[in-house]
Length: 301
Image (tube, rainbow, N blue to C red; front, side, top):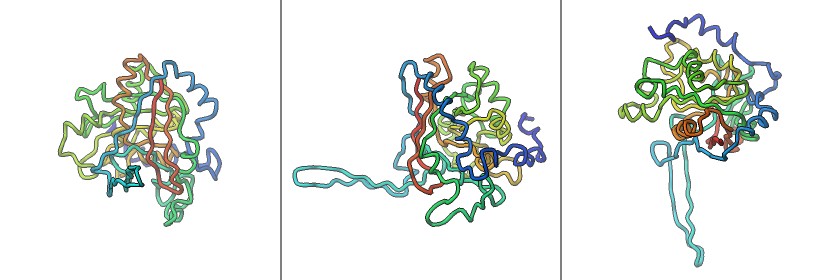
């Protein structure tokens, strides 16, 4: 039996009370683990820039399947030619790289730090924990890559064999890197290779490989500022009531999640640079009152 299955339902039920960060930074806090990225942490992260090499961690935004509407049309202005675009897209989901706002997921009717979930939402957007405070300053700190996929025989995380806290620790040890408070942890689970090997796999329809819900314990123990991942959480979680798996880090911990990362070029860069730590920055669009926003994460060596 996989290690993860030894985590009992009762243990998982205890996570909210035991792990949550509600009130840690005050009852009016809407920044969550962004509070862990202090000016001193940013200054320390700057020292990781040595060669100036930059690596994009965002996925290409392609016409399908993520656009609901896209049009490109040329215009003529006297002797001048120009071209305009319009994009309508759903960034939450399983393709577009984005940052989740802390209002995106609630728990038992409440958002992070105890405000009513539904009562904080309106046609004008979210009045509690929107993307605004994250977009205002971005996520800029030390980043570390945990290349879980490199340790799997298949080259990717498989259905029914999720990533566990123990595996995250083993991956960090293999890379010779120590996760510190205020870090952004980039987790490569091999999503691209998994999709190539399973062309009939369908998001939200097929079972999802990914991180086991017990990784919530690891997130809290390491006191990280954000998780940036390619495969996200295992679904179904295997625990009644916990359908959102490790996405419950949002209401429990106030943890920032950077979804749908493309870590392939980063993994290669880490091998070539001989280190798995780097300067990380991601800036979501300033979509006022939004439940998240597309973002472009970049690693700098």
